[in-house]
Amino acid sequence: MRVSVIIPTHNEAQAIDRVLADLPSDLVTEVVVVDSNSSDGTPEIAAKLGARVIQEPRRGYGRACLTGLAAATSPDIVVFLDGDYSDRPSELPIILEPIIQGDADITIGSRLGRQRIPAALPWHQAFGNRLAAGLIRILYGLAITDLGPFRAGRADVLRTLALEETTYGWAVEMILKGAINGFRVAEVPVSYYPRIGKSKIGGTVKGTVGAAWFILSLTVRYYFRHRKTRNSTVRATEC
Image (cartoon, rainbow, N blue to C red; front, side, top):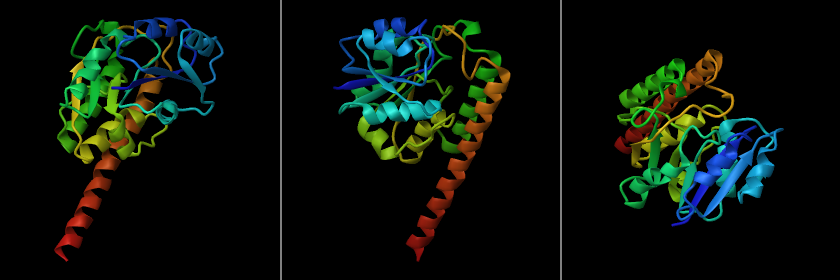
């Protein structure tokens, strides 16, 4: 299978070499680093280590992921991984296995179920993730515990979902649309460590609250949109 790894970056010069070095070369077909206006040499380091670097000047984590997805070269599976070395790239087989074995269409790495240093995930970020995961369980019946950034999906499934969220909503859009469309979303435990460098979102309570509000409101909005569409379909069928 062709596996494309998408890594969004912004000033990750301290970590990107470790991230790229730890990716299992026997499993990865290509690495696409999508850089957003780094000023510390991140794209140069990534290119020197063999990654294909794409510049995405527009802001937004989701936008960077979408840009990478559009640029991937005929993949069978697409993996999304942060460039801060908080998740361990060497655990890629854990993320890929359910898809390769035919047991899942999308996999999400849970940062709460394996090796985790308590300080790696600040309390406010852990709380926000648990709250969002709990809401998804209630509204969508999907048993997940975390919205981890280390994730993968079959390329054909991701194309079907027509992902479009460019900011914080990226964390849940893939999960929600996957559940709504009947695809199999599986959670697997991954390790999680303190990131190298300063977090752009989770490093502050303000940033986490803003992201949490966006994620929770999107989760509710998608639910009611789906229910409205489903009810309209049922009424049309009855007529």
